[in-house]
Length: 261
Image (cartoon, rainbow, N blue to C red; front, side, top):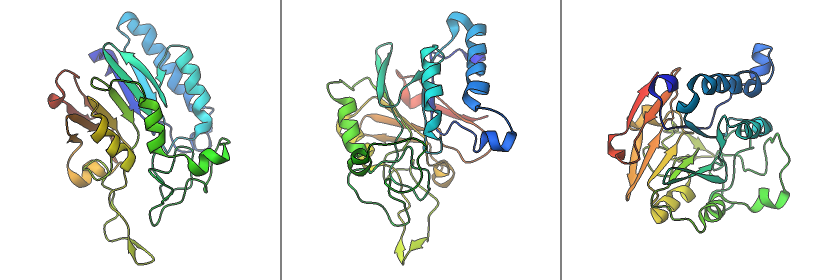
């Protein structure tokens, strides 16, 4: 599709790695053995038509793979964007991988949201499993809210595109399949996105935000887009066997479309 359509840019929003790749298939590293060569071949074939590729990892991706993505950035295959920013023409582009606490044990890309509160049924970020070492104070006291303040400090976000893994809280994009579930008789919140990201969008009003993470949300709500103030929020989350592709023009965001391939 990239080769056929020649977009100006491609955004990959995390959860990129196959689960248990090496163990299941008896092969080596997915990034260096498969993903990077595929993009390398595409770049060679497309030449000057090769798009800017921006990517982040998601909470299903083990962080021990991060150096391979940094290497791919250095080679010019893509721009690794977590907690960084770059430019796409007149649009600043920012990336951020962390999500609020989940019930899952892998915690490489989890962070407290606006405080040290953890929802019922979730495992706090300072527990669980990590594949890389983390500073203890950062683990205990770091929040998504503080990270976003630092990331955006000094930037004009009017034309900005932000690539998040987590969707904003309380929208059609963060609706999880938790209906009727309780933990110690306490109902679980069916909205599991980031309050910090939702508040950030409300306050900063960037041009567009891109999301994933809650794979079942479009199936449950029938929606893959939301508007917060002037900000268009688009999601490529999907829980089927297909890949979800969202096409958008920053100059005409209402015309964005989504296709399953």
